Image 1 (cartoon, rainbow, N blue to C red):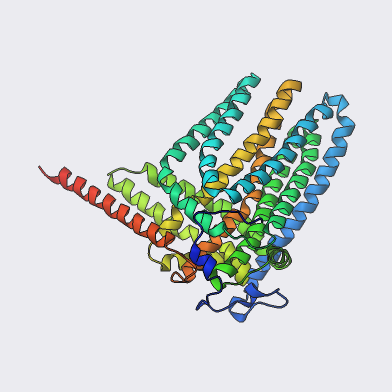
Image 2: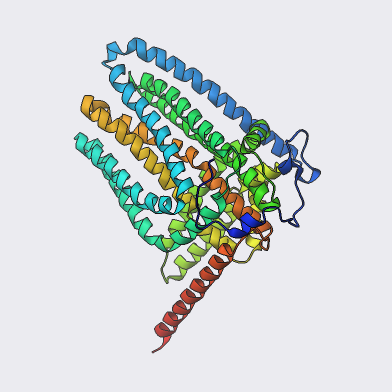
Length: 475
């Protein structure tokens, strides 16, 4: 990844003392190519090895079966197209073009983050709602009731994004700083790893589009099932591709933060693909599920802002559940998966314990906007992709506009997530390395200052709550 010419928030300490020794024990997994088994402290249990091999087998079986299904559906669709009034020349070009646009947009988006993180952060939170709303308006213009209903959902989603952007405005400055620090000097050959990942996602998505078109040509109930299977396979495969990149780059970045050593991102990717795919597949299944559960619990807690004792105890129970769930699977665990060859659940538990061992760090990580930033960036890429396909279809064949627009959005979203996985990897490595040695000279005062600020806000909020309760109790 090309080094930016200027980064105002990059830490001067990091530049001047890149080789300062840390009290952390060096890991043979982290410093050299993995030729044999990991150290005895990181040996996997029989059950862990079984699950890793099982999920690895599931991945390759899914890829094989999906490929066969796509080939059969494509051939069948081309043969039966004329008899079912399906027009391949009108259906395929807009969607395939949108897939290519998603790749270009992903490359452009991550380049913007490299050269101007501050503007990219702010642009994401206002550009994503605008693009999402544009997709909604496009769907409403198609004319049918179903299209208008789906378009209304997109408009509502855009409004939600706008409100969220207003709510998190005070946290943007810290997000800007942490992104600038963690991505100031990406590992060598990061650009090649990111570009390869995007190219693979675009080519694979284009291949699956041919199968979706074959199933759409006949439009039976069984074809809808085939399309659902293809889309689910696409989602999981993209998650694995994104997380493989995240493991490789976070591994290389962690080595630099924790030990002052440089690691080539391409070499890290080679080790990741060769040895760690099983753990990555497990994480790619657990993390989205746990994020959904934890997000739902947080929503319940926000809505239970009542003085009712039953509601309060229920919210407290949900909070305890959320704290338990996050230790079973979180994206920061991918750092230890790559660095120490741990199983994903063990890695997630160990990293979260480290976060909790540093006073106030867990609150900082919970308030970090990197995940939201990557999500909204992917939504923006998906919106650009769907606008490309939707406008094209609206002009040449309105009957296909809704389905093609939605397929383009889904593909663009996942391509966008793959394109920005390196960003999340760098930030994750920064937090994990900091939690293991908070007093290292490689870290500046950004995180301690944020911890102090959050503690002051918490104390101020508690004081206001106490005063309110006292005023309610007074006659």
